[in-house]
Image (cartoon, helix red, strand yellow):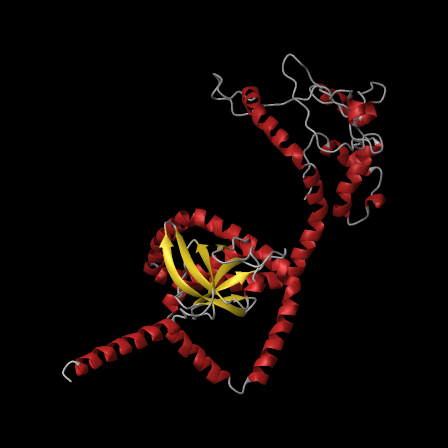
Length: 436
């Protein structure tokens, strides 16, 4: 009796241990027939644990039995279901994808387009290295820090609040989205202009970035200007008042003289057009006038040893006679526009003509005086007194005396008697007459 009860206790403990061991074995599917394979990846990925699903085209074909590191690789022991392993090709690759945005990851097997025999036991599966897989992996890796910052619990609360707010508002939300689509459709033709404006904005931003220090300096200097304006605000107020009065006076002046100003502008237009036409000639002419100042000073005795000379007499020695209409009418036939001729330097003598002669330039040379036509001109110089009697009682003298005597007699010049010149002619000869 004493030996039997302790033996019962030992058997009970062994049975309990076997039950626990069997439970663990059944939980780990130790007695389930599987096809073991191995997956080698660069890293196991976040939220990937033992027991995660292995899927092919969305169908669960196995599970992850172990995760361990071997050197720079992460090795995952996969257990594939024998009933589905026939549909898993030997050249399959794997991706580590999350079930949801915040859920755990699973192994997604990627079957290639080319056919291959079914995978065998203890085969090694490589990681999918296609561009799509690499980009997706980078997105998921970069998304993890964002999720840690966003705090999924708070984001879930915010999404729940948004869901509650939008509950029952589907029709209005749909109309809003449709209207937004219409607006975006109208905006689409302007996208090239918008892109061009954005590129131009980038250029302008770069320009302002370069000019930033100068702008800051200008703003700093502007503070001094604004301070001065603040100190002189009373003076500026007085200035504004005076400017206001001046503007009122100017407005009244313009209102009263608007027609005169318009007539002045219209009248001055032909003259201004001529001046504008010959404007290129002005610098040359003015320069030649300035260059002629020293010669003029020497001609009039400036700087000579005769300080008491206050008058200069210029005598024209060659008279060409009086002006005769039709013969001496001035004309200018040159239509070549503005030009400037060089001034001849000594020993060149006057008159000076441009290249090609005076006729090519359009100018005309007046004819010299003729001795057989004394009536065409009046003599000048000392011989004028000697030749004066030749004009006594001439028709020209009678007409002149008639014009002078007509106002005193109260008659027309034609009614003055011809003999009046015989009486008053000697009185007027040699006298100076002023016409008022």
